[in-house]
Length: 311
Image (tube, rainbow, N blue to C red; front, side, top):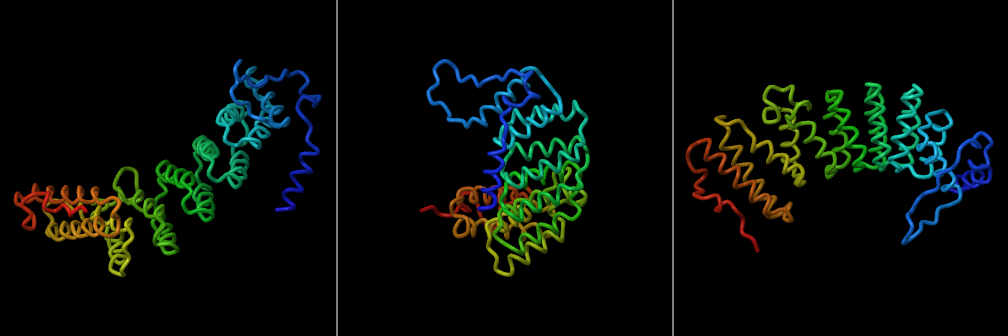
């Protein structure tokens, strides 16, 4: 930490303001306009004001040059969440026909210091889309998730890449490793659902029966359940599986019964904060069974009889 601080101090001491740079003498800086009646003025550093005054100037003049591109780097170093700077940087990259693979390396470095910055991940997504080249993305997101398994932005980027380029082939194996490390990793369970839900173009869309007939997924989840795991995410996933079995199947009453039992366990013990939700799901499953068979299910004459008591 000390060495990093020392490097920052050395960099600051050697920093030359844009207003003092000979190559920028032809540009008139544009100061920030906070209006005539500023309530609370932000105390920007001299460096911050200088960089952004010159950024506003090139933005106003629509200058798209090498020096303007370097200026966006300085601006993003000071505020990597500034969407306007990222957008203008993309315009310059296109105008100058820059090497986009170099840009991917640059944004990777920014993301390492700002792993939960939406603008950084969005910029990376745009560049990947321009290149139509996703070969680095699963590894990049894996590294980010190794640091924080619940990094929403990394998950969002990974799922976009999977959908966009249909890279689902080994994704369930990756999810398996995450769940083996932490069975209560709700992000991993959510991602498993994302990969398994038969909504085009996700993984199991290639399976003719989708989620409800994918033996590997069902066996894996049932093994976890049999071993005593009662994670709400696992239980909710099983409800989805059992509650979506094909109408008319021979095991339909059995799977519906299991779905109702799990709903009951979720409402009473494992996910009580969403008790009413699981009651509602149980009623829907019972009604679906009644509609399918034309008769009442398991002696429940009314859906309300399946609703657990509230206290």
